[in-house]
Image (cartoon, rainbow, N blue to C red; front, side, top):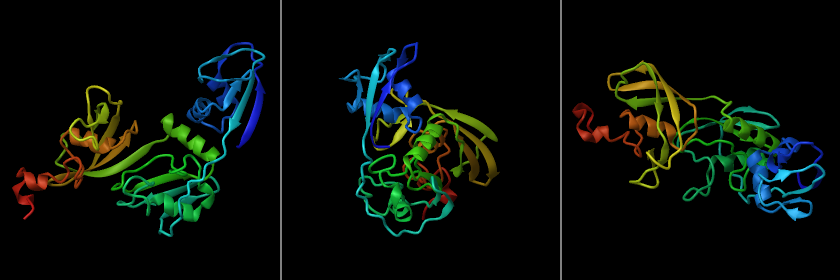
Length: 272
């Protein structure tokens, strides 16, 4: 949706500007509408709205201008993708380990987004200039299903589902050692690691609450295959939580998953 829309507030009770706009334009997320307000694109009675929380009164005139979708300028690339499902609104892709989801420092080409744009060019600009179609992410070394939105409406609805945690996400992982219990819950606020700002850790201050549920699928001599269910979606959540209980993901260099090969804890596995 581009262009301007003029509305008259005709409710008897006072209501926040952002809540009113969410009701009138359900295809847009509240955060997106708040950004439009912050960018000075909403006027109330001829004056720029200062914040989304300002109260409206009956008879107020609201003018909102929706910015045009910004083209990313990303060049589509012919990279094979495993498509699990596709319709006019979304793509479900089985992302392989080793593939970066969207462009970032050090990964300006060859991402999943570049490959997806080759399949669905109209997705460009949907949801973000440099992350077209992206609703959620998977780490580079994580494989699994990734959902991409093909249009703004689908992006808004999918993003709202993830934000409201009405979607369920499950992962399988092989971790070092044998967990004592067959199932359990790991909780701990996650924030930037004080030791390495590129990594994350469970922190006492400044982090965000995170909860991970696990269940043992199969036990091996030195490792365990487990199923994980996320109740929150923090960056590196699974890897941080498992490392915090001393069962890091097998082979995860960033969070100690390869250290056991060198530590002497299991001499028979030590790298020669």
